[in-house]
Length: 375
Length: 256
Image (tube, rainbow over the protein chains, first blue to last red):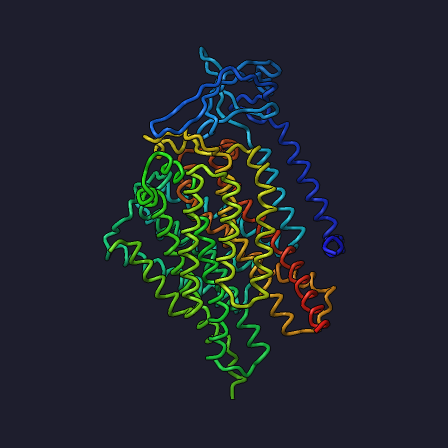
């Protein structure tokens, strides 16, 4: 049965695995302790909601006949840190039932509070560190327990890449007139090198995969640039991008480039790995057949990989699109304002993914092919 | 011609040249996925229950992505079953976690984009966050399940006499080979889509403590985390379903 199979798989078989379970358990205790980390927050007052009472509830209707409720609740909050540790305060909280911008609070939740001299206490927001730690812990545990060493290496590559991203953003912010597209594509290339080194090790397979990844992603970026200048960026309103603090167009391209890299690496790795296997199983195979074997693998994954990115980019715009529709906008306008930029980014990434199929197949067929065997 | 049309034509041509029939299927699947996504938003905007709508359209999106990507019946059958089961498990995890996280709707960082819009639209934004999370993981679930199923199928057709008791272990081993690239596809994908926000956080000097408690950071973090959990869970699930499917096949072979 499934349970027996899984138990057999999960049973620790070596000292190293027992150590892993131990470390995971210790991290779990660490997660639990974040419930009591309020004294560590010196900047804000932390409080826990002890009880809530609803003071008023009023029906509201906006100009599009959307019915909602404006609710006021009184929270009894016990302060957990700072000079007023242990005191109980009463704070008023207003929110709308739909919860678009503000939220209801429930007993047991921890909040950050603000108290400036002469003002009433106000709520800054919910304290979410325990939840973040818990979810990170669950993911890391699953990765280590189910995927073992490859899981650990994946985790390391993700963490190193977060560090590299941080460095890139710091460079972007601190060097004036830096070429943003070049900076982030350079960092992206470094990230691919780190990722593939940890996933495949340093060998011929990795070199071919990295080469295919770089050529296809840069080619996609160049195609995107050419098409954007030929069509005068018609229909692309970069000023609509979210959270923009600098010239938006280079950021738009950098986003598409970084997003594409992971999927392109995925496709290239699959293609090249299969070709090496085929080559090993049939050493006398011709280059042409080896190339076709690569194409076959690539064809069956390129659509799904493009869908992965498409769903990531478009799902993000979901709440805003819904808001536009309920605010009496047409479908066309809603799509234009919220979705077009994400779709174009997906298409640019998709071009990279599709290009990777012949490029990876070709490179591997050329370099992996064992010349000495051919008679 | 708009930039999007021009780029889409290039993508479609490339898919066609590289993929032939598979390329056409990929185009169809992309276009229809957009249609289903948009239908989901429209139905929710019309007042249908978000979680019921997303369960139905989610299954359709999984089916379109999986059945149009591969021609092998066994691979697509197993991957689709895995996809549906993982999606349901995910809904069961997402509902309580998002409830406790309270990262629905928008944050103060969004105020520019919200100008002039009425926010009190009577739709439960918490459920909208759940819908967003579920939809954004579907592609990753489909891709991981297909990779493991295809790998196992290939292994079995090369070595037909592998004992069934070893199949689960082999499936997990194949999972270990694909997990790195599958997780990195997600990581890079989300990194690309969060780049603007990441720059914002660092430019405005959010400290570590501010960031991990910020509504907007936690909401994006959860999207990434849930998709990773989905991919990891898809591995044992696919290995198990593949084993069941082979056992069933073996039984019907004996009966014939």
